[in-house]
Length: 482
Image: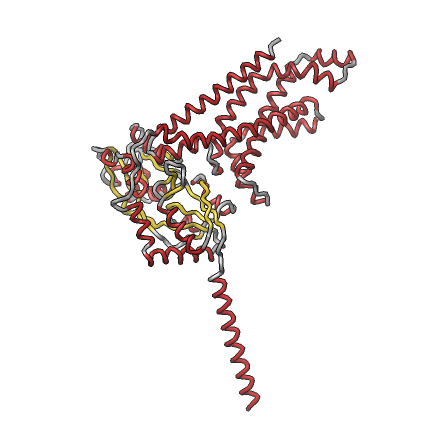
């Protein structure tokens, strides 16, 4: 009997011990110290007032203040990475960012791809048209044209309109990267209405001072909660953010941040000279544009020349490989190549930073074009000259360098000049992988000031750069005339 009691006591003690031990393990996991951790937050830095750039180029907004307040609770460092909003889930799941925190609407489709925090704010969609329009309810949109932002939840809500109104639109909705282009379409009477988030719309039109120029109504079926997006496996991080936001609600910090951005006394943009205000950010973006241009040119032209030479004089099997490479590079969009290199390579274990990925994509693309230009130049030299080099015993390498190459350079210079100037403009495509070149800076400024003036200023700067390049290239061509 005593043995049975002793065994029972021992078993009970073990159960209690393991239960206590297991409980404490869970507690340690739930309260793991993450002080000093750095997290990368992805956002569309044109989305006022949630997360955008102010006149000084700083990233500000309701979500930014809220994220910083949560980070202060845990001692985190946050890095804000602008991204192409249409690629946000890809950026997150490929590991380039750790959170999507930027007015991110929670939808069933998105919940299949990411893990969401608890909702911390909600907003509905509004239908905006010009003052005096006959569009006063959803059914009035039948036979009308409408514009909205690509990658937003607006299109999903539109497809769920009652009475099958979506299929009765005059055409498919016009989609733009940002709402600045959307409202420009409405102002130009190319569309009848705009469908956008109420928070963004009221804030932006108030800043612009044109709120009274439009009429709008809220689509009551479109009220959506907003949350922070995480990778599916980041449950601990999600829990910490949820608890942090709740703490801010409890201590009143959340209300203070909300009043700052949405209250009656929310600050408005001061009257200023837009051209002078946007120049610093555009010139800062120009630095990246010129850096990318120089690096790509210095690397791709020699590589293109080498490939062009091998395309003409190499063995047949190598010529076939080069021909296939050139066909792929010239036959597919540069933007697609950028996306494959930056977003696709991590899936095979190769992860490149944004600038390196951009340089690699541009180099392999432009090297293919330069290779064809050099191949054409080499083929344009009369075959008799090659025979003369052989007969005179000059030597193939020396003869090519001293006799053929100068002629090739003279022949290809006009075509090379066109490609060089095209590269300056093509650098604007790097926005798709989150790099802030000049046109991206113009887009941000256009949304900050709700004006198209920054685009015009960016255009003038592009013209100045290409004008300088054109003058330099023409002088080089003159030097080659003999």
